[in-house]
Image 1 (cartoon, rainbow, N blue to C red):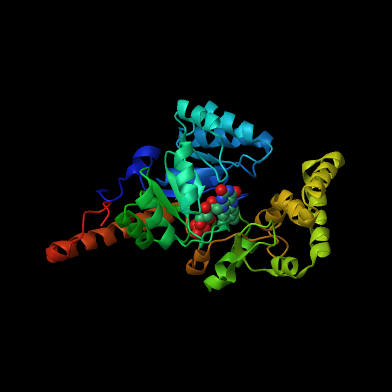
Image 2 (cartoon, protein in one colour):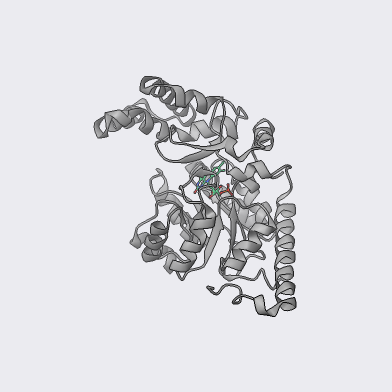
Length: 370
Ligand SMILES: Cc1cc2nc3c(=O)[nH]c(=O)nc-3n(C[C@H](O)[C@H](O)[C@H](O)COP(=O)(O)O)c2cc1C
């Protein structure tokens, strides 16, 4: 039945379909991961924005509801509680962890000993090669059209480059939302797809209605553009009042905005004035010209929180993939996953039928390089 959809991804991650729900700050909570898991996909909890004292509870909630630890945890080594994320992933024997800037070889060895699969996300070929050298079990490539922090190489270029260069299974992210997209990845030799924006735009997404409406309103991929104004890195988001204001502000204006969000972050997290001052002084010492960006990067959770939690889409940032422009309605996670799986299967069946009608034009079998 599922002959096209049994891939190294489903085998390694123990899910029914080769479809991954990626981590998204303030969005990929236990409920989203549960909905994904129950529909046959594989979900990642967004460990970077779940408060340290709630993380274990979120993990347990998914385990208790789904009856297993067939899901993953995303974290970044630079976050305060990175060590806690590593320990919890190992303690609960989660199926996988994902990360951008990755843990060192020693930490990866700990994951391997506990059979927690390491699935870094990369945006360039050289990062894929480095990730494999460090011990990645699978790799997610994220093309530049993807949401949040993103590279400059489109999926259509990055995926074949990485497939040709590495031996571990490769998952494609950045711009996927359809079964046609999944079929194209499987036909090229990929192990499956990973999606952020499509899962953000589901009925189980915790994102407030006012913010989701902004995502649904996007009709032109150009409205979802890259800015470096937030933290100096390429960040793809829906253009809004906040981002236009930030980009137009000079260094002093940006610093003022950064300090404003830092203050809010302090109020919410109970961060001490001393800690706030130490971030400020460290940034000042390291590179005074980058002060506003360092402060802004440190306070990104607040900028994200304004839109993704408080439902004020013009007062924070709206990370999104360009694919938002191709998504017209909120579906359930099950409808998304089953719809994509069934369309992919039809596409691949049609491809096979065509190759049988015209055997002389049949290329090498799926998954092998041409
Ligand atoms: C709202 C939002 C928040 C995100 N937050 C994170 C994050 O915390 N950690 C991470 O590794 N990636 C994050 N990403 C990137 C996604 O995990 C994923 O790689 C990307 O959305 C894939 O591209 P797509 O949006 O075209 O599907 C975020 C993306 C979005 C849209």
